[in-house]
Length: 288
Length: 326
Image 1: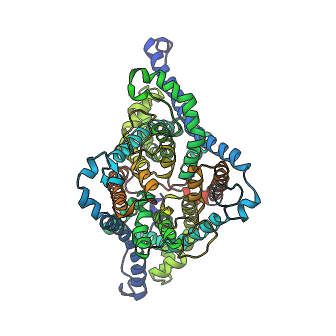
Image 2 (image 1 turned 90 degrees about the vertical axis):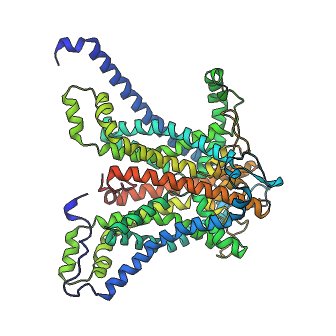
Image 3 (image 1 turned 45 degrees about the horizontal axis):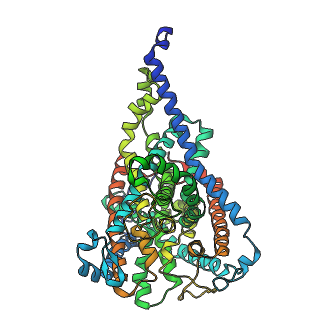
């Protein structure tokens, strides 16, 4: 641009607008990061002081009597999340394979759409679904009902990631298998799936960290339990729902333990996302 | 995607077996039934909620949607308060979050160098991974007091002098904390999708307008935003669906009172929070059926919002959805 133009008021105004808007966008980026920093900071500060070994190895005291732990909640969460992965993952991976292998048609488009819609359904309605399906007919809150609700939440996440990972397997690999005379199922099971496995495991880990923090679907399915239980057909405790109870409750030591549980949960989740990103991140990128 | 060397081979009948390979069919059948499970779950979800709330649907009729009196002890059930509560909190959060998220997405795609854009984008995405209850806990004990002591007085002394809705006694729990928490929670959803669709705007668009002498902001306003608009709207609507269904974070901070909020500080209910708060202690089957009907209304709402959002996002990204993780 020449010198005269650079001094014109119009140019200066446009330049100024540009600078102001750039500043606003940068400010928005800072604004968006601040909550994460604050939440992690407060969870660390408030949670760390309340961490103790007793928290891990004791059941809760009767309400109002400080002390006690959350062994029941940790056990319950581990059981239900593990069970949810065992139930949900095979179905989700099967669904993902179907969408990738046989889904390049109208049926596939509809199913893919339904998977996305299921992913968007509120977790509390999924909890009520399991309540109506299992708890109500049996008049009994059950660990298995909670696990099934979590499995339903896991299903669409893992299904879509499996689909994308299977679609990313190079066609030349399949063609090599076909050329050796392998039928389709064998190609998928021995060539395609192992190639896509790191990506699928990544998706599974992310889904696992997501359901480990879900409390809403457990309120009416597994309910909660003051004692450590491993019975799948009885009420069982869970970490996120105990955070909810303690956060809303009246006692100071409940609030402290709620922060401590949040610390464990957030550390677990952040760790999973960071590890996943470090190990398999490059494999999950691919599409921009 | 590397289009030439990815994806399944076209489904063609095997020359040798003529497509009659039993194991292949079995394989298709097994994976197909896994896919059908999704359909069954969605149908089951609607079926269960409809049958379990049928008595309430019959007893309350349309008054359920439009009535604002919710009084379980007298068997009066009008869910209007909760519907308004959900609408106000989610729409307010949607507007605030969309402004921030789109600005962040523009910053990350158009301005920030990649050494800065990657960590910022990653940190915003991590916000989505933090559980709802932790937001709720933080909302009560950190955000709530901050809003009461700092933001509340500022709001009442400025906007509150002009608009009565913003004039009131700040409280730790109420409409305002719920809106702020929801905003924080849906920014990552909207940001991630906006970033994808803005990144998908062809570079030639940008180069064209820059060659005409536009500044970078003019390029964004004239060439980038209009191109990305429907995708951004789709992302925003997905964020809306998340806000509408968000339960425990909201339940902890909204104050839980069966009345429409008259100021931005008043406690009220959303559909999800009334279910979370009352279902376990429901006074018998009628109250429970009414709460299940609230869940049904919530389900139908999120279903419709999701369908609209998916169609918008799909149109832009051609059916390919970005993987959540970078």
